[in-house]
Amino acid sequence: MASLLVGAVLVSSCAGVTSSTRAPVALREVDVSADRRTLTVRTSYPIHQFCAKAPGGGQVKVTGDVAVVAVYVVRQGDFRDGDSCTLECGIVTQKVTLDEPLADDIHLQSPTNADPGCG
Image: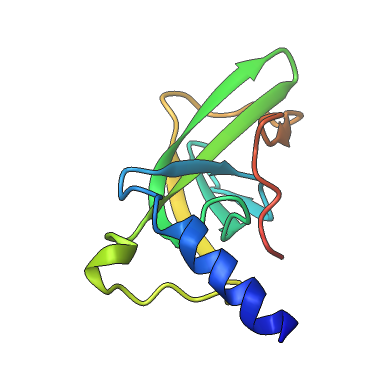
C-alpha cells in the first residue's frame, strides 16, 4: 500500500516539470586533455530534476588555483508527451572546451549549488 502511494506522489509531482528544465550537477569524474583545453566530464542524473538526462553544456570559471566546472543536464522531451522517464541512475558524459589551457596545479570543483546526482 505504501509503495503505491509513493508512486502516485512521484507522478503527480513530475507532471508539472517543463521540458526546458536544466540542472547543474556535481562532478563525478573529469579527464583533462593533454593540451589542457578540453575537459571530459561525467556526472550522474540529478536527483532534484526528474528525467533530466541529456547533456546541457558547461562552463568553467577560474579564480586563482580553483576552476569551478559547471555542467548541466536537461530534460529529454516532455513527460506528458509519453517519454519514458524512469528512476534509474545513469551517467551523462560531455565535453567542455576552454578558451585557454588550464594550469597544471589547478583544482577542479563543482559549483556550490550543484545537484549531488544519483550516484
